[in-house]
Length: 302
Length: 271
Image (cartoon, rainbow over all chains, first blue to last red):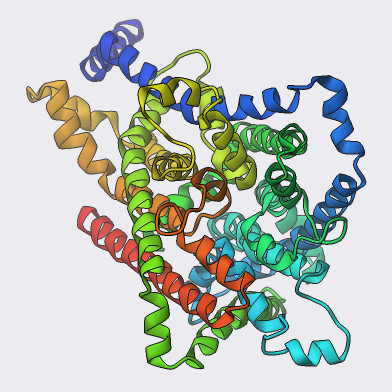
């Protein structure tokens, strides 16, 4: 009897599959279009970075990294990311705790405002700080009197980086923590845990993959940001050049091979980011599913 | 009996608001206040000078066509990734996010080298009379690259959740496959498609890094508005740069609002 029923189910399912299955020619055609598009616009540019970087051989490739200007650019990029990512991580945790665990008026406006930096052109993200701290800016004269440099110096680069990477961690955490509710935290409190213990032992383990996911995306953007940093940097070699800005300088000086060699560092970073991101999406689908489902929801309410 | 509530509300909300205010809202507000220092005539003549208007046309025009091209391409990609099994599918799925992960400057120099006269594609296209690098077509190529993930990533989850029963029912009722797709699948995807288009467009309008290398930056021809802002800054024309920034900010905020309204309308009418 059971066997009979399952045969029927199988036949029914099989029939259903076939009725909505695309014909083979259409499948082949659509896959061909997709593969062609992805190859043309993504794979070829990706390959070209490495081919151009290795054009003059492995020796020339590695000599690009010996250049002291490259080294100082790498250091500055690491410094900017080392400040921007933790800062936005702490903000992301604080904002998602407040938004996901409590009710208060203006919550949806706050959630929208957090996404605001994504809507602003990177060039403007840099410009706003020039208007505040630049020589002709609001606080420019005061800063000059006190010999504090922000624009055309490291603090400006850090600020611009913080601005453009602002939403990454928060937008991963908020939907997940909203979906998880606060029952577990309340249970922990009832059992005598302190607020801090509850956060560390209950909330943090629950959101760790979404947190990591947000951090790698935030980091990729922090290290790769170009437009915003370009405005506030002043392009002083060895001092205020980040890796992407150094790529631009080399490229504009017709040191194409060296430019691509340095660019290949950033490309490897992008590839590592994509691999980690995909691994989290496959292995911890549930933790980031809330975020990805809410991406659509967020688009819906944005 | 006293009900225990979670602690830390005041602390976390206070910190979040202060950080948001100092890092994002105050600097953005400063931009608007700074423009208020300009007279209306000054502002108007800055934002409507011929060179600036040419940059709007280029920026908004190529952004529109790039986002438009990404609509059919993005839907096909999402469809193939969700519905078909083929070798390399996961690789393709991961690769779609490359434009989000790859620094824009790297994308810019890579695309330029491919489409330059001696590049992989340029050496074939130029003899045929098709110039891409240092033309408006080049700007379009860069903006298409930058906007590629948006439609795919908005359509993909909706397609995954789309009940096969709907399509099955249509088929059972005698609809051809094409009719089913046109009458059942496309309408279900439409809000996501429009959202993806608008997001790709909004991203393209502000884009800088990937465009400046391939565009050649010729005034009146291939100069995008974000580049003009930088040019004015480099000439210490702070007021001019700010005026342009305000125009772009207003457009970005208007786009956000439109996306929100369209979504609210579309999702409500479907609910």
